Image 1 (cartoon, one colour):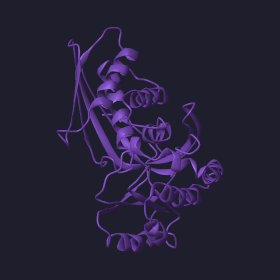
Image 2 (cartoon, helix red, strand yellow):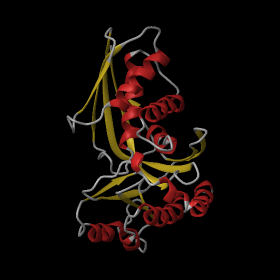
Image 3 (cartoon, rainbow, N blue to C red):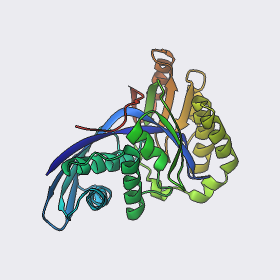
Length: 284
């Protein structure tokens, strides 16, 4: 039984660590999962980009999807390959989980509700401890496309809107893992997070991003200089996730992001242009 599916990376509008409410938007960076099911008793995972990567998340995703969509137990293999850099704040874990759940369902001949499938991936992330909040905001944007606002404590989708942006991403060489984030420091910026949530639910996503980026960069110890450099040129700019990547957005075809790219390219790391995606995850 063979299945293959693709899910998207995403950028942050609101970090959910302060209040449990979060928001994210899908970008044109893909993670593909290939699942082969058999009659063995275990699931074995691998990551194309890193032979030593922790594969517990995708293995747990297969287990939960088999439990949900199959009549009998199955083991097998799952392999992911991705354009989304790992531990960079661009939702690589959510993309891998979503793609794996959909690929497993595909191998079983199931066509699950996308929001339900997304919640399975969130459950797997909590089970293996790779997230503090459960990351339903990140997972929903990756799975459904567009911009989403969620209550991560209840795994509830509060809003979803299509967005059409050019996106600039700067990813430093360092890596940051969501499970290691300073939750207490993030709690200190809860009043700002509440303001960001109000802006996002009002559809003012660019403004929400910028407020979020300044607040959480300060809380998590990342420099605000990249965001300040981008503000005159971008509709919104934010630290993505718990870092270290920074994302800036502008209307399609707006050349102002080229100026930001020139500024960010002087920094160590990788700077790249992409776009938003509204289609979400899909079976390949």
